[in-house]
Image 1 (tube, rainbow, N blue to C red):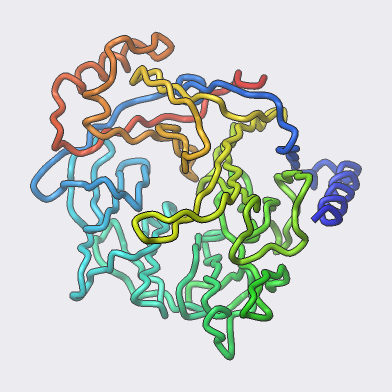
Image 2: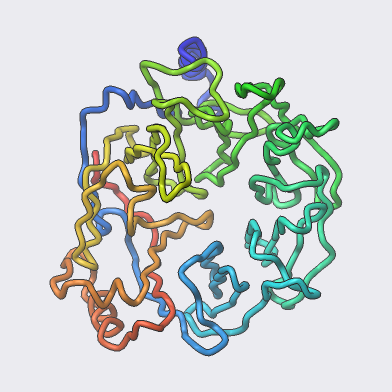
Length: 409
C-alpha cells in the first residue's frame, strides 16, 4: 500500500508539469494525523433554497425506505419498496408509474435505479431479471425494449456514460460461486444494444482463505466533472476519462495491508462517499472494522466511523465534529456509531442539493430557526410545520451548493 501511494504521488507531481488543459486537481489527505475538526451547519452548505411538499393521496403514500429520489427540471421521481411515483416540480402527485410485484410491467423490491435525465428514461437493474436493464419512458409512461447486458448477472451499480453508453460494475458473485467463466472486468462499458465496448480488467486482488484468484470490482460515482471510480476494498478515488483512470482523492494511512481481505481483520479501514458528488465540497466516511459482536444470537459487524469534510476550492479537509440543521434547530454530535451524518444534504448529478424531511422531524423541531436563511424560506417552513400531519408524505428542501464556501476557507 505504501509503495502504491508513493507511485501515485510521483504521478501527481509529474502531472503538474503537463499542459494545463490536461491538468485535473488531485486531493490527498493524511487521515491518521488529521487534528483539525470542523462544525458544519446546513446554512453553510446550501443556497437558493425552496421547499417542496410532496402531495399525499391514497395512491401516493411514500414509506420511509426510499431507494430512488431524483429532482429533475419539472418533475420529481420517488421510489420505495412499493414502486415508483411521479410528482410535478411543485410536489403535486401525478401518477404511480411502476408497481412492485410479479406481474407484467412490475418490478421486484430489489432494484438499482439510474435516471437518465437527458432522455427522461428510468433505467432499472432488477435483481430478478438479471439478463437485462429495464428501460422505462417517463414521458410516455411505459416500458421500452429492455437493454441487454453484455455481462448477465447482478451488477453492483451502473450509470449512463457519454449519453450513449452504459458503464457498469458486476458483483463479486462470479468469483465467489466459482463461475467457470466469470466477468474479468472491474469496470466495463457497453452500448444500448448490449455490445461490449471497453473494460478495465480486475487486477486488484482480495484475500479469502477458501477462494483463490479473487479480484476486486470498482464502484462508480457520478462526479462534478468526471466519473469517479474506486476499487471496492481500496481507498484511492480515481477520475475516469478517455478510458483511463487517474488519481482524484488519495487518503494516506500509517498502517495498511498490501492486499485487503474479503472478510476484514479488526482495524481494517475503508473509505466511502455518496453516490453523486457536487462541485463545491465532499463529505466522506472513513470506516474502521472493530470486530464482531453477538446480537440476539446473530454475529453483527461493528464499525467505527469518522466523517471528513473537504473544501474543493483549496483542498483543505477536517474531521466533522458536529452537524447542525439550523432549520430544525438540531445539533448532532458526530460519533463513531453513525453510518451517515443525519440530515446532511445529498447531491444529484444535475447540480442540485436536497434534504428530505419526514413530518415527525418538523413537528419535533424548535421554533427558533436560523436567520441565516431567507425570510421567505422561513415563512414557508413555519406554514408547512403548522399544517403538516404525521401521516403526510416527506418534504423536500431543494437548493444548490453555496459559493463561496466559507468552511475551511
